Image 1 (cartoon, rainbow over the protein chains, first blue to last red):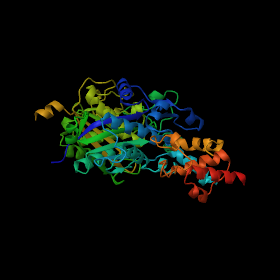
Image 2 (spheres, rainbow over the protein chains, first blue to last red):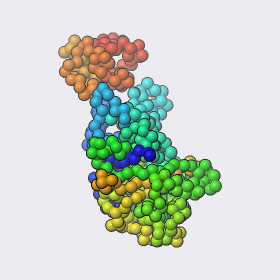
Image 3 (tube, helix red, strand yellow):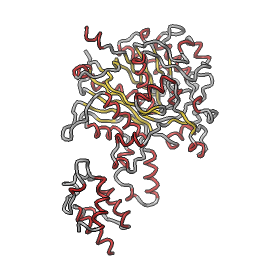
Image 4 (cartoon, rainbow over the protein chains, first blue to last red):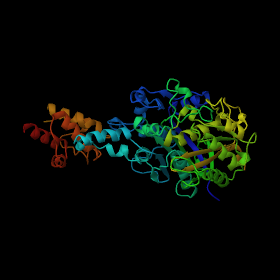
Length: 430
Length: 83
């Protein structure tokens, strides 16, 4: 039998809250982290709304030394460090002593691109003939494994320390990769998560592709409208989420807090065939990913209480809902509750999966399902597929037991993970 | 030499790079930057840039290789400033 894997710590650095308690409050009260950004307006962006964590000096000084902070321009590295270090502390795990790495603990912490602003600084210096002035920080802040490497050093991890990259499915994929490592007996604990840089150089490409909304620049909190008839594109965002995954044995042995069990999940790719492309999903692959995830998790579709979709607020939301109904074989009133957190978080790109998984898992402890804040005008095609009551616009007082979370990314890649409430008392009785 | 203005300035530049368990007060002219003060070797590059900024000099690869101790740094700076 495969080893069971649980979540024993979480950390978050999101546009609407840094740290679990602020984030929990924001998510359950529907506080938006999206803002009008004058910088984007000045640069003539179509979408002048974005999401970026409000990092203070206090946050920085908590985890970065004075030397770390010199020339620190990699926003993704900052967000990932805040989230990763919080998760580790939240799991009540120590930092390794100065001489001995923790051989049983590793990290899979992904990103799409890291340290864009640092790269820009380097490019300007290089173009001015000043390569010698880059200093020692240009590489560690811009290599894509910069975040896993930095966290690995702070914590002292001696197991696999790596960084995955699969566009907007990165965060959810990281959890599944971390889980595999524990299930296969190669590690006891894996810090899994993802981060994403903020700013015009990251978001510009999406602006140019015209997949972002342009008519909500003065009403930022209404700009990201997943599942809505008036959804007109995703709002670029950034941040980081982190989860400490641990073998159940190890977690019980050290009497660790347990947020939930990760039952399993699946990743796949639509091969950019059958309607799939670099930017669009092959629906068959999405369905297959969801059904594989349920099968691997040993969960019947009727047991899923709530789905946290990828649902970015583009015209493709209804296709995604169709894929869920097909994969689960459920529609109308039989369909589980459905939410998207991108209404308040925006689309955190490589950070989205991990930030949203943290929020999804918080629903267990709160015994509530988080409502969709901008979906009062539910898209007509979606209301044809599922009962509109299953897309709640306010929190629902229902304690979920099983949550399915999917993330889809450019390259036609998909990831779906199944979380289950962990009941320590009933576990101990068995 | 330890009481000179230059020594104080160099110590000020080096101090931020010292690991937490090294007391800046324990630094002497003979302290080896990497072996004794445990300064991360990658950070030597940053120290060199900081020294360049402070004294308006340019330190070459050879200078950096010769800069093993705090005293070495002082001599190299003094030599460069004379030029």
